Amino acid sequence: MTDSQLSEMLRNPFPDADSGRGVVIAGPCSAETEEQVMSTARQLADAGVGIFRAGIWKPRTKPGNFEGVGARGLAWLRKVKAATGMKTATEVATRAHVAAALRAGVDYLWIGARTTGNPFAVDEIAAALKSAPDTPVLVKNPVGPDLEAWIGALQRLAAAGITRLAAVHRGFSRFGPSPYRNEPEWRIPIELHRRLPGLPILVDPSHIGGSRELVAPLAQEALDLHFSGLMIESHCNPACAWSDAGQQLLPADLASLLSSLVPRRGDAPSEKLDMLRAGIDAIDTQLLALLRRRMDASLEIGDYKRLHAMPVVQEKRYKALMEERVAQGEAQGLSAGFLRELFQTIHAESVRVQTQSEPKA
Ligand code: PEP
Ligand code: MN
Image (cartoon, rainbow, N blue to C red; front, side, top):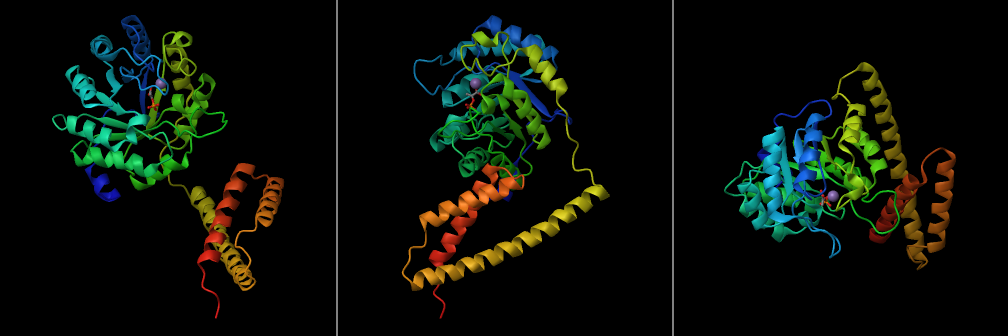
């Protein structure tokens, strides 16, 4: 299935979303007790939240942690709907989860990060939804930074007739220390938006940040990048939560976060912006011409190395070049991370052209 075929099939899963800050889905990581669910839900409804989330079946990284209350928690979600008028959402990973959630009248289903990357599980969910193809499904990104697997999961659902779809960006895991629980890697959901412009993409700052303090700045970043809405974890007593205690917000704190967010308007055409963009376009044209010159110089070096039977990659030179360029760029106020990534990419392309080029006649 091509991107444009998928795009044409998509239907809006959020017909009554607010156009300013977009869709807001909030609720606890896990449904724990009826009291916790009802107390959190009442407070969130008062804060204007339209869709209440709660995990009933919890896929945990390590065994021995709380794995959700299971199907009995679905009755509490039904009660939330009746008492507050909010719509409800929960995570499904198997055929049995889907059947139980549909029977209980859950409005939105989401596929969790650990499931999206598993084609068998996604096909099983899609098959279980064939009898209820109007059910809106939110597909979280897979754990690893794999855009094709994310799109593949959307395609599997669409192929089964499930087309009221949205994506949820919850960050990507990586090895090594980071201020985030899951790396935001904004370029991946941005690329998803480029490929499937009609697909709403929500951002889950709770699972990206992993800590309460990071939720608000990430939520604002999501709005600045013009994503379609937010999924945020909120609990009536976050410190005592049975899962993800460090990242959940009190409903009152969620309410003040939502009122502090500054929405951005759509693409308002303006002469000033057109002028600034023309400036960028001219700079990019120069950048491309410079890159072409750099690759020509690199090809010439490649010919020389071949003539003298020298290896293409010269470790010492590469290390010195990186250090120098990062220092030069930092002196001009550019960030070290950006410079490293930029020169790694440029160097990789130089190596590719030097390896693949034909010797000059
Ligand atoms: C969740 O939303 O509670 C959850 C388990 O999320 P993820 O699949 O993004 O880890
Ligand atoms: Mn969670």
